Image (tube, rainbow, N blue to C red; front, side, top):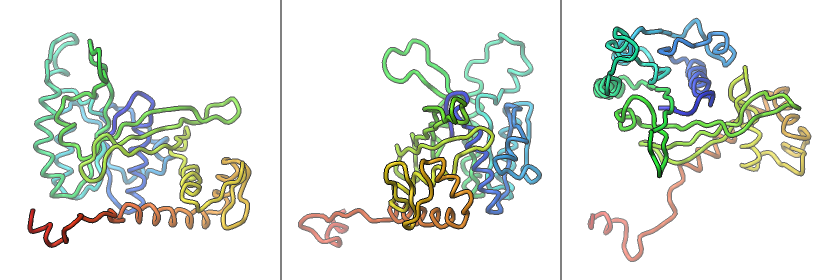
Length: 289
């Protein structure tokens, strides 16, 4: 589940996931419950629109049935649902505005989660729900924010990402993008509460080369002295913007830096904890347990 305020980059992030999956030869589906997918923008982000399965369902039940059918087929690798807030129950669509439908969406989501969980595991399919934020009324202490669609998705989700806009990216006086922070608020498959910061450029998506410069400096692959950036002893630019321009002009060097960064980060994750149990061998410890 990916959730956050409006214009924080939720759909952009999921479209980048689709583009990355398609580059690996995966089949992707986009359930556009908001009826707001812009194919021109998606193509700019690298999405192969011609090979993207796209559906704009009429009701929430229909959208979730499509998800279930795609998962059971085993033919789709990535499914995006945009968004949970737009999954409107059939009874609400057929009723009138102002009618009370207490807990209808939550019941629909709860039932769908029970069906989908097993099918997704069997087919090894990635299902990403985009969600919106609402405010709880009368909350005096703690966080008043909550997500739509009840609590079922919170429990069933393996990973929950909170995406926020934390600043603007400017060229002179013009705002050309937004500084974005993504925090892992729940993780069943790795350590939670890690966060990443990156730039989303309008019309381009995630600023991949900018992130590469930052990670290169952090991992000491790129040297930074004052405003100058250097790689392998050669100066590549004064200021981050010029360093990014150099990487654009030298894709082979960018690929090399990316490969080294990935190796370093993956090695850090795979490293074993450096501790021993005092006064006992490993075998004795296992026997005790």
